Image (cartoon, rainbow, N blue to C red; front, side, top):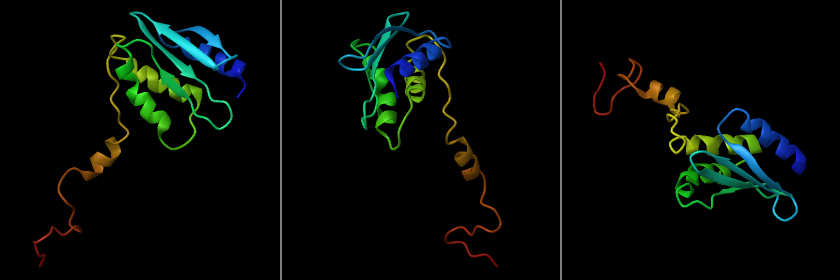
Length: 129
């Protein structure tokens, strides 16, 4: 994607959360820098060619919170800038003083696993007569 489109996507994303896009540089790194009060900052290196996104922070306080986003980026499949930014925002919610969002991705699975086994499920070691 052209860098100017990435910048436009980042600016649009910033309109819905506390972060501001404070720097965008295409010449050396294709880098987007973001900042939010109280001192939460990170940057995204945007891919060129077949590379993937990379997120990092120069703040020692912010860096540990980026692990979730870094794991997400390195998982299978191509990610969009907006997907990466949303994962970073979720990671930083505690630093921003916002409540955590419950991850309900496994909620459906756990709901199916709870409760007693149905009549068609035989328990191990118990014979049904």
